[in-house]
Length: 317
Image (cartoon, rainbow, N blue to C red; front, side):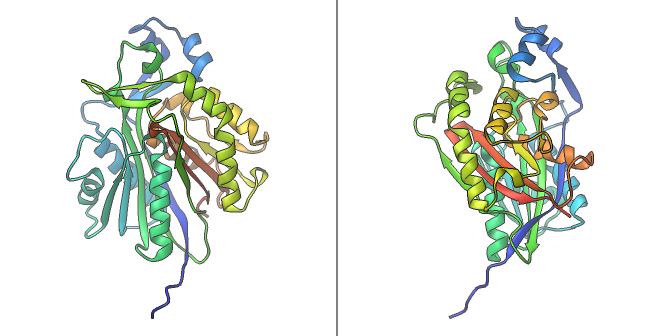
């Protein structure tokens, strides 16, 4: 009987893409009854990016992937896991189309649809594949075009949604540099965040989500830290789902984040990009030189389904 030795996995590079079109709060106020102060006070959002005619989930995913691969210094990968709840394609899947666009001969291709926690689910799958030897290098992407599913007459949701993509490359490490994923769903909240109907539109029960975020999110984040064998004081960067600044701030406070620790607040300039939000905000900060090389980052996504997932990882050195 052959004995398989487990190995570690690590982040090798990060990338992102955002459309050129910027939509400010004043632009939103010209479409629905709202204003900049109302939006900022309730969400923290100042502006967001929206796709143009030449953009798509696929094109954004490919651009973010290329940037991540360049950052990692790799020319090919064995596995592509793409998280999106707004992909234009059913079959071939979006990951397969990324494989074709990037010329990644023979790479495995998997799509994930758990909405806002999709990137963390995808990273969990890629990490396990690399750790167990099913792949040596994996590309993990979160890409969303939420604007295509937005009711632009509904001020409770149109102020939130935005478009973009983020990606990371995962490779082999002598010891684990990405912790096992903690994932699951919240009973009773399955319908709290949805894209459904005819036409299919994004909707949510904001009060239920906020109530859960203020009471139920911190214990799960603590589980993620416990699984990784670290405490909140050992985290350098908190990269949480960019749903609402009024969720991010209380959650990091509940975890005991200090002024010396970095909290990603990309929601302010990028809006809510669902599965793209964590890698998008993280990659932007990384490429601006704001994050420590080899630093520890808490990744935590939650939303539609109502699914959640997270892990602790070390940034590239």
